[in-house]
Image (cartoon, rainbow over all chains, first blue to last red; front, top):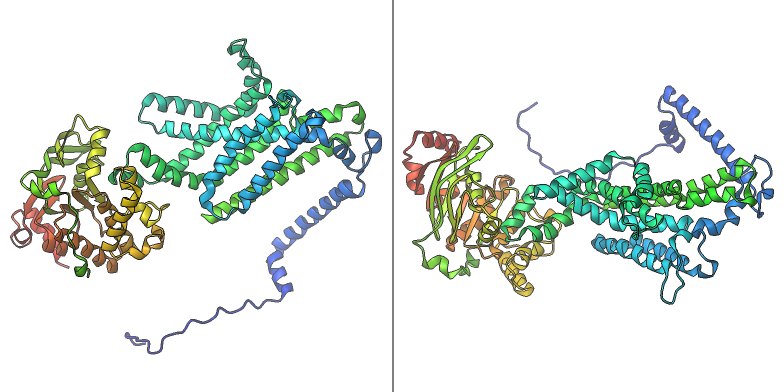
Amino acid sequence: MTAVFVRESPVAPRVAPARALAPGERLRRWLLPTPAIGVVSVLLLAVLLVTGARFFDWAIVQAHWRGASSAACPGDGGACWSFVVARWKPWLVGNYPSDQLWRPLTCFAVFVLFWAWVVRRPHRASLLRVLQGFIAMPVAFFLILIGGGPLPVVVPTQWGGLLVTLVVTLATFATALPLGLCLALGRRSHWPVVRLLCGTFVEAMRAVPLLAVLFIAATLLPLFLPRDLAIGLFARAATAFALFNAAMAAEVFRGGLQAVGRGQIEAATTVGLGDFAALRLVVLPQALTAVVPAVVNIMIAVIKETTLLSVIGVSDLLGAIEIGAKSPDWVGEPNILTSGYVFLALAYLGVCYALSRYSRRLERAR
Amino acid sequence: MRAESVEPVALDASSRSDANVPIVRMSAINKWYGSYHALRDIDLRVASGERIVVCGPSGSGKSTLVRTINLLEPFEHGQLHVCGIDVDADDITRTARIAINRRVAMVFQQFNLFPHMTVLQNLTVGPIFGSGVNRSEARQRALHYLERVGLTDYADRHPAQLSGGQQQRVAIARALCTRPRLVLFDEPTAALDPEMVNEVLQTMETLAGEGMTMIVVTHEMGFARRVADRVVFMDQGQIIETAPPDRFFDAPQSARLRTFLGQVLSH
């Protein structure tokens, strides 16, 4: 072999070779690359098939769909969807007055339209609009739902089901995220007292279970507040949610702020920006974009945490199902309550899975 | 490269008239990182219009020196005077830092362009939100300097779409957009691929030819020889030797400088 090499004719680019594998062979390689993995694959598939078939039998084949009381669901063999179908109103809105039903329905419709816009919006630059929407919606919904003026007042204790889940979730987003950002900024403050307070709050909240925070808010908080400032259970629960999740969000935002390099702040300084302008124009836009997926994770957690509200007596979707299964019409087979739980799980699965897919898309878009 | 584009820079009139008054005066400046004595008794005067090149082995404190001038690094002892602003080590305020940074610009080794903004926004954000220039004037200024660095076509791109050399030229244009009286360069070509070093050096030479006061930390000895009025050699946080380039390179006085020059010029 000679030490000198000079290419005389350049190599033109060629098309990559096509993968020529028979479909059967592809499936074999995918499923049973080695005998041991093949055995495991077959076993897992068998388990999946058996449980899937059992669930299908319970949920579809033997299920009861019609009827207005537990009499419609005799025996234990199949799901009792008639319980879910017949009590659609408590699931959706709780005890909201029937003649005012358009108000919660408007809220649901606005939310669905907003979400459709968020998912389909053409460019990431409108992220700020999305945030504004998430702040504005819960305020508007609360005003519409509680009424006043020309609208008859409906107190929050009459709200329930999915409506409570929606309002509490949105109210938590709208309060916890800005508060979390303030806490994260506070932990970076030059002022030691602010840094200490924010740090202590975040660490304390992160170390206490949410259920404990909720019970404290529900039972202990009224003892500390002045007697005439009797805020309702609903508001107390919403406050607890907001504070707890603000601590979670603060940690996420802190990570985002740390991800913005020191060089960026220095560059902002050297072009003459003051501290606040540097934060607003240079640091925050980059930090917030970086944490969008993590913030969506917090949102998913909040949606699922709302089921804890039923434990302190606010009738969210879970509460509505448990109350429904105790109502005289539906007392009977344990299957009825199970059907309600399965319905609840499917509803949450749908919402959270959609949200998590959306967050994946945002991650890829970066 | 861009000899035809040389035109009078709109320099601040005062920076030419009072050429005797130093634009930078560092008196007995000392700085520590923890217990490490990073700058030791630094005395340096830079007159308006002067081009200073600072060189020295890595860790000798040259970056720290220029970063002290615009107060990116605070110092523990000594007095600093920059563009008419006096700062004492015991009294480094935010106000002073902002005031100095409105008169002094900086070009970084890692460019530090704002990745979420277009090139044009990178150039206008300082004038608009820092010095209160109105938007249309800031835009005109930005386009003017973008033309000067030969990147007019890139105004609406994002920094990530540009090569390293182009990014650094944008960073130079961004520095000029604030109409500085002094530009600091902190190893502006050290992070560049070799084939992009020249475009940046030529942009800087054009700028030097127009009378801009510059303090440049660099290992580019050819640039120092061609452009500098004075070359400063630093080692272990001290200024070892300061001389015009011909004397600096051809008749170095100190042993340490001779060793250093032997190392950087031999290859």
